[in-house]
Length: 492
Image (cartoon, rainbow, N blue to C red):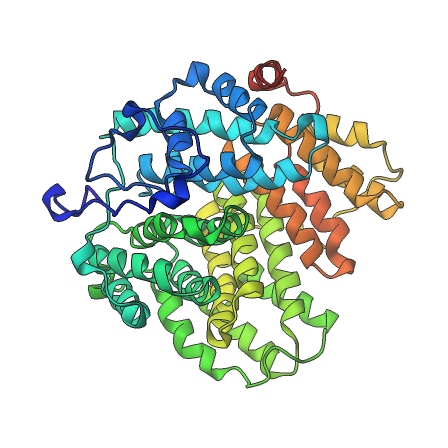
């Protein structure tokens, strides 16, 4: 990366065999003329990435639409969009302009959930977001991912150990080279288990590290593991972000839960993933999450698990606690309590390593009171006690109320759902309003997380959780995004 290595330290990546180019469009001289020290992507995707990089914001949607009419696929556009963001946008801090990368998976999920006529709208929104972020990155120094320093890349059999060494020492050079080796030789599951653990080890960047791990892995499953090397390198660089003193030599509050929970996870009973689904444990855990410290909350997890409880009631409580923070203090910090819980739960479900899964559960419990403190979310509405409206309104009225009285919208949504309203009809309407009226990456990230987490909750808690989401969803009275008309016109 430019901020850590001199340009002379980098070697260009090797060109891939000509057999892979058979049948692909010719690459122009301009497309082939790349900085030899800049990371090169696979030849079948490089021209499309260059199109996204080099086309102006005012013309990009129309140019991509022309390529789609010519046969470019949804998967190819997603891959190019992710890789263009990775190559062109500084991933530190892991937020702000880097949301152009973080939001790609959320836009993809919204696209899958859209009617056929609107399928491309979320992706086109993300394309425009990339151009906006690319412009800001250029104003702030024009960071670019460069080719890996090949002499430092370890053998595959040593890649995990080298990566852990670099991450533990917060050494960017070591971790970057090892990440490249992992992508080249390790399987996706083995690599994911390593990355999701380091994505959860510290509280810096209010959860964006864990979010980046989860969202990039989701996308790699769609676009293919052959694109993994630049993604893992970008991830390792992002996960090593910090300010001030090297965390390996310090005792910052952001690192304390991770260090304590690495010790604490060994206290959990060997059969921690079994046990009973105890409803009373949800209330117990939620009470500690409302008022306890990060240490209290992790200790409560251990107490309940060792008392015979299964993990499900603990996650039920954590999902509700995050949503309650959003109701009490709507804002960026409380929103990230929701999206971080989503990311850590995704990693918890999909990780294979037993120790890593225990660590993710404990870390999420510890992070929620830190979000509560940072959001200044004191006493207020309780997600398990607010009352539904006496009479369930029509869906249209609920989303009209979102634009004015969010508590009324939440109570109306609860009445609608308790009265037999279809949750999928609700979430379909909510997500459609996101891509019609959304103006921010958080709109997409939040709506995709809420829909996924609704399925993860025990049925008894789903209605209130979904009703609480009205505190960040878009209302029907908001104006449509100008990009909607432009995208539809471009697609013809």
